[in-house]
Amino acid sequence: MSSESLPLFDDSEITRVLCVAAHPDDMEYGGSAAAARWSARGVEVSYLLLTAGEAGMRSRHPEEAAALRAREQQEACAVVGVEDLKILDFPDGTLQSDLATRQAIARHIRQLKPDLVLTQTWDLEVSWGLNHADHRATGLATVDAIRDADNPWVFPELAQQGFEPWAVSWLLVFGGSADHLVDVSGEPLQRGIASLEAHAQYLAELGGDFDPRMMLESMTEAAAQRSADPLVSHALPVAVYPMS
Image (tube, rainbow, N blue to C red; front, side):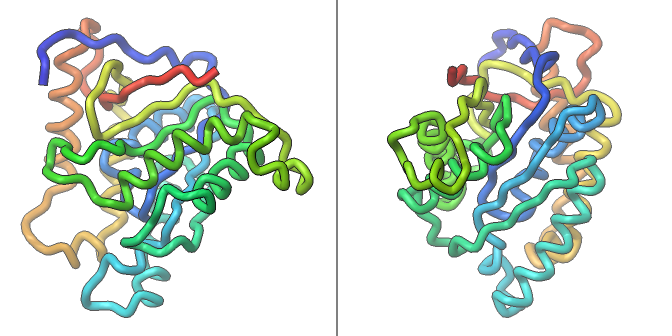
């Protein structure tokens, strides 16, 4: 990663945020700390998960895994002040960035009217290895859905259902290359750590000696070293795209 300093993203005028991810627990690898920052400031933060993560636990039948992961995600949301959680039923493991996925996200954007959408990177190569296919599909579908949501001639049936076009101002992408930082120092990071820890049974299924606190603290501390602001001790690196 380059040592060049990165500016803080100015979120002072953000009032509504939609976070789009593929699975339960995806937001908790840094994104939920940003959600905690925003919700603490009175921003309306919503989560849209495209799958239930039902294929993520080898020891449990998909229906059982989906129910368990939904419960853990609800607990994770409560920790960071997110009350609006929607889990769709696209298939875990074979998610596509196709028209159906784009329409589902566009419908949610038109319904919630967010200023900002936060999603995960569509990059193939990421810091921890090769990115999950569902993550890549989610990122790409979200980019397209933001544009779809603002175009009255794409998915015209949405307007007929009462979902009028809406222009999102900002897209933020985490997990890949970054050009800005979101300050998550202090309480937001602590809530972000607790939100990942809420996925206790899922993390236990993965095995190993994974330490949520150590991972998130080290990741956000390293990112904060690229801030020129000495008061920023921990930060989420994001790529920022103006969309309107």
